[in-house]
Length: 284
Image (cartoon, rainbow, N blue to C red):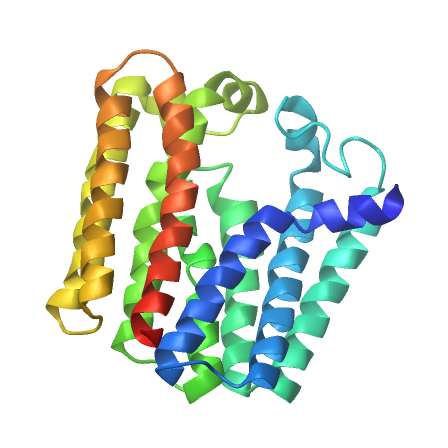
């Protein structure tokens, strides 16, 4: 039971998605399949960094999580793990991640991962989340760092394609989490978290979801425009973009929370498929 609780403390579904984006950064940097051993160490370090930061985040949010129906069963608020155990695991995982990446990959990838951990824990969790409706917008940078880590692992530098990957996740984050916030609006209000629908209302949030979705899709189409990807990704990005825009359009125009929940689910699949399409585009 406790072992499973430590596993869940990592938010494994989110970590898996972040590892997809990390690997995509590696493939684009290598312009093919990266070295298997390098891939192993990079993904292991990335998983530990993301999981450790998640654990520290749950330590910070433990009182908030108790007040929210969606998070009350997490390992710390449910009492399966003590706050001290959660914090100790998180700090240990983050330290191991940094030294593993520095020793087995390179210092740049380790520093980028460290920046992501500090950004998520220090800037987002401690400062932005309880203070502003733009918490997700500004805090989105933390989740956008993994592809930079992947790129740096291969090249030991950062170039324009890596920055595009960062930007895609950055613009994906607001519509994804605002869709969830529409569904869980009462939960966030009860917990005192100033999410956009709680402060500015549903209408403004629905419009922001639609606008950010248009910007996100346009951004993905800039990559083939600048000859950073091939025709396969262009076609795939158009089809996936149309799917996501339609989901956002339904959120904007249809009443109720069902379209928002569907947008939340679809946007998760969209991000994974866009990054997988980038991998396929390089390999074919």
